[in-house]
Length: 120
Image 1 (cartoon, helix red, strand yellow):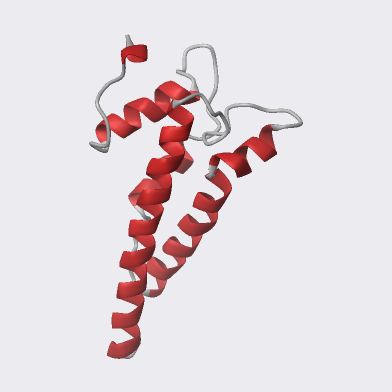
Image 2 (cartoon, rainbow, N blue to C red):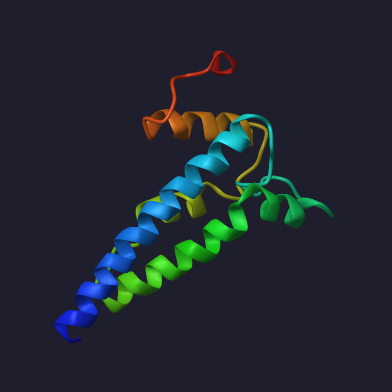
């Protein structure tokens, strides 16, 4: 890959990763307030619409694009925020916390909020 193209891809990647983080924080804040769908824990007729409206679908698309650019640049590791979102998605059973609690805990980890009173 020529150096100019590599530099352009690096700049594009940095911008896309920053955009992903901003979109993720917005989606997590919505989820924390009770808007389900981001982590795809629900099933049924409205689950796909909730995923779209939660921001999950656009995050998935952006995450795929980011991973594609990373591969072009020879970066073997996936984009961690996207990889974690994928790992957290779709796991629901009686012992797992619901989406709002997952979102709240992740926001705290990301340093974007303090633990809320509903975490007690």
